[in-house]
Length: 441
Image 1 (cartoon, one colour):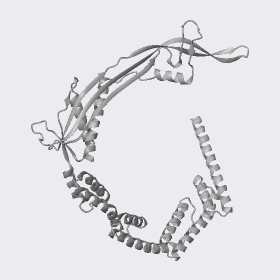
Image 2 (cartoon, one colour):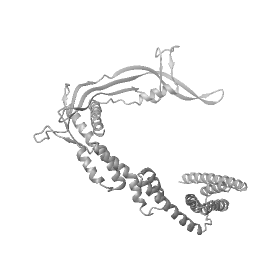
Image 3 (tube, helix red, strand yellow):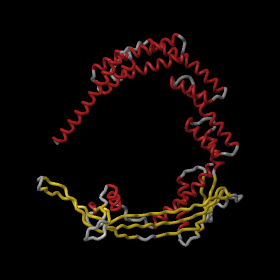
Image 4 (cartoon, one colour):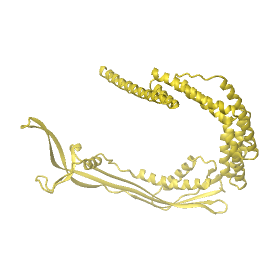
């Protein structure tokens, strides 16, 4: 406990020392800038110094001096704009000055901010807001919605409760969208119009007839789809059921409000869906693979400490003994092809069609050694008992790392169920994506 406590004290001391150095450096910079008459920059340095250490009395004093000069200049700019009836400049000069005052006040540097400036600000702000409100209303009347939006956003930022500026901002933002949605409905683009109305409702609530029109778009834009019996032309049974289940799950997970999956197979099923999905599986091939074993030659590294009699010091001695280890490799795959088409339920017109070639593959490559694998080094040798000039020891970082990766590599290959599921999922994703793309276009 004492050791941990000591380490904590050392760490805290280093932090405090670093903080102390930083605040002193910033204070010195601030004093130099102040001497040169660069009061705003000096105030910034003093501000950062106080942030680093709020008990730095010299920095706080400098911040008050230079901060007051900087604030006075900002208020002078406001006063000049106010006197010259430059209302916009006056409004934003005042806001800049007020924000600066509050920023310094938050770190303990209380400046003098005469109260009469606020009275002047409220006066000029009222005048400016009235002018902007009139300008924005004219923009709305002229259907210049983007410009009106910009103006009413500014008014909201300056005074959120100013007249009916909030309502006018809602109109400026949503009226163009509302008209676009109506246009889409006129050309039977109900699904696109639906999402526009949905965006309007999310932004503005019950804007005009958005709720009713959104509901109408949903009704007119919905499409009922039946998945016809999938034709499995392979010798592997059960594929069609898995594929159909995955397609249904994908479509339902998409939560597309316009797609209504219907059953046409049962006695009480819907007979006339808007569209029918036909799927065929012409190919499904499982390649189990075979684990290949290969004997490899290498070395077992041994490091010992040996006394050097001449120097009377211990030296490191490395020895390599010839050993044999094994490497294994295996590949397994599932190849699956499907064809699909979405056909109009009444006219038999093909809405979309495609095919998908899927190949789910897994490969393993690993090594095994019965001894101390951590000291195994790759290489090659001609004879286990005799030395040869052809013997190679690859005791370098790259080769040793590659061998260790093989020794620690995955040894279990994916089974049939996993690979077949991957292939089926990929094919189902292709079908469901094509349907969703068609519906959303």
